[in-house]
Picture 1 (cartoon, rainbow, N blue to C red):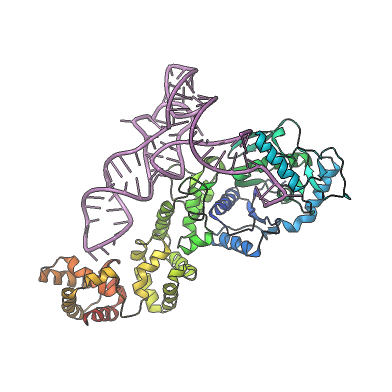
Picture 2 (cartoon, chains in turn cyan, yellow; picture 1 turned 180 degrees about the vertical axis):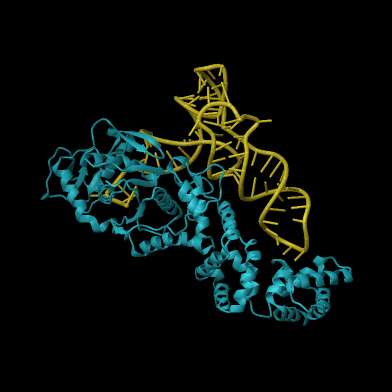
Length: 479
RNA sequence: GCCCCCAUCGUCUAGCGGCCUAGGACGCCGGCCUCUCACGCCGGAAACAGGGGUUCGAGUCCCCUUGGGGGCGCCA
């Protein structure tokens, strides 16, 4: 036993990597990293009906986007079937398990009866002492023989000590009638064989922890440390639904959120470090600890995510943000596809790229997401003549165009095309005309960006360059 | 129905018996900055679910109620 921390993220490949799974993965990753250990990835694909290769790809893609890496190759639980069956035989031999001939119909009947009587809905153990053996006239399953008395105690790093009465435990099925091992057995065997030291997963697995504890005990194996973290709820406090945040992480990527912001936000959901709100990944690794994880469920709040994302948009290193933007463009949602494609094309041009980089700091502080960054920077990629948005059209009334004509002449005469020179010239022009600066700046902005919103107009003009700027103004003079 | 868990501003949370006239963040409201929108800065409204105990003293410990959540598969 090396003492090295080994965690695992063990999703079942029945759909995309949803936000709760992403957080579970993050916690496993952070915990392992914090302790200088490693996280492994295991695909719980024992349900052959529902597991798909597409889902495996989606999960791996999601983890990669979030930059949560794992040690070695992903392990397929299904591939370990023989080993699972071997352990089942072992349990059969030691008397910890037995064959049961009850059919699903009989069990359903039992449950219904129990419900009607207000009793716990458990298997009544009728096959326990029958001494059934394989060749048999009915299909057989293998059941675990739960202890008749005593308690199952779980020492959980998050939940504390949780006790279940042994007689409240079911004789769970270890092997199905078709000869395949079930989840609870497979998990125990795999976690043991993979030498997992810490099992970190959602509280929805708490009762499984008790079941699995019984199996560990029967096998004489050491139980890994457990941590059952609270689930994430929707804004209404109920279970996370598609409508809220139960989207695949790919959807968050498309919406233009940054991986560092997702990690930051997800980590803060249920975990805290004093009054701190913003964490770099290094800080997360250094400070993350299970004992600071609360027990109550947290609601997913898009607004807060947006705010955290906005902070990262503003504070990421310029080059990195640019990389993120380029990486995002191909993943833009359908509505943004045409613009994203044009942006990609234009960004290949060194001049456009330079303009974009020059304005990036001014643009980023106005954008909470990469999507908004595309929106704000669109005027850099749009072809002339610019299409004006509704507000810009309203700003460019006839008198405004007339004013722009004069201003155009003034700007054309500028000896130097710099932000300071333009600033000075426009202010002087406004003063001469007895106009407030806004009365000049807004039409100018509308003509040059096609929008009523943009970074400082003088800054924009400088970045665009004399030729392009004057041409854009001219486009609006003709009428 | 049975078992388990949870409960501080709208939301995420700090608080681990006296530091609490309960702190921070998001959001909200007001103001400053200002060529628009943001950013930034200043200020404000906003919470210990209820009831019993324990204690000199309870947001902090115990019990009950209420409210929420999770589980009760030959799914994982």
